[in-house]
View (cartoon, rainbow, N blue to C red):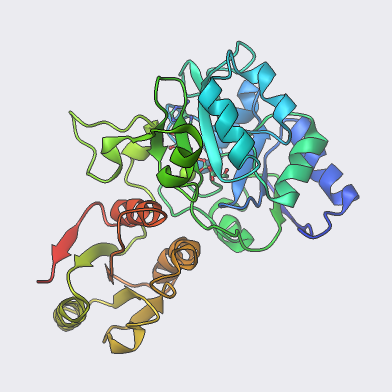
Amino acid sequence: METKLIKISPENPEPQLVEEAARILKDGGLVAFPTETVYGLGGNGLDSEACKNIYIAKGRPSDNPLILHISQISELRPIVREIPLAAQMLMDAFWPGPLTMIFPKSHIVPLTTTGGLDTVAVRFPSHPVAMAIIRASGLPIAGPSANSSGKPSPTRASHVEFDLSGKIDMIVDGGAAEWGLESTIVDVTGEVPVILRPGAITKEMMEAVVGEVFIDPAILTKPSQDLRPKAPGMKYTHYSPKAKVTLVRGSREAVISKVNQMCHTDGVEGKRTGVLATEETKGRYQADVVLSLGKRDKLEEIGANLFKHLRKFDFLGIDTVYSEVFPEEGEGLAIMNRLNKAAGYRQFDAE
Ligand code: TXA
Ligand code: MG
């Protein structure tokens, strides 16, 4: 299949291009488009066939459910059985934006979309290009991250092209994704909302709106028999580059000296080494490639660069990557969750 690549301006989405993308979706085809978190791979979320094709294009296991994307609040009602009070409060506060909520699904949502579950994940993205395309299609749009299953999520149209060119109908380039990490997922079907995947909307931000919010304990530890994540997709070690990633904990000086030592040893063994550093430390590592995620106190910058850098290490043929760690709170929780997954939970204490 030939994949058509078009550019749509986020400042002023061109109506005829938006219509062209929407037409493909209405006809059952697949279109990758930018959102404020990462690029999504869109298809008609009410059409089993389109959703099956999404799983195939991504090489994704069919028990890993898709998120339905809407472009106005009124599109929520037909796809869910009920809207709990907590959900109403959270959507008033954070929609449109990087928050996905899990609802009991209505009968019009096919089980193919939800990976066989009786619940459905819904998100109202704030990216103007995503909003325009979804609205023009008049459909809830199933939209997983537009990467091949197992790769880091795409934050640029070029990442999507690399993974999915030839497998989908269209890629819409709308520039770099602002957040660079996937949306926060919160399950609102129980008594207390539970975060299933941390993201830009933090526990603290939600607690200010609805009171207590829990975090699925499987988020920061390696999933095991007794501790299974409630979001099916969180059980897979994805977001992982080809390189072997190790997180290194400890004081700044201890981390720098340990990482340099390990890079030296790897180099002697003929491996190409990489370091995920910060602006404060980037000049101090001796590795083949050192990439700075940003300033330590600018967590949103670090989140926005993470997947791009992981992909770059692959592109450069790096064998081992050592990464600094960040506080596991606020936005740092999402960063550490993705880093832990990239590392397969491998970490080293430098002290
Ligand atoms: O930011 C995002 O959420 C991006 C953009 C494109 O919107 N989308 C995204 O979708 O990250 P995806 O499919 O890559 O990740 C969706 C996650 C998976 O881990 C999946 O298991 C979980 O959401 N999920 C979907 N439906 C669910 C449900 N009904 N119950 C629990 N988890 C669900
Ligand atoms: Mg994904």
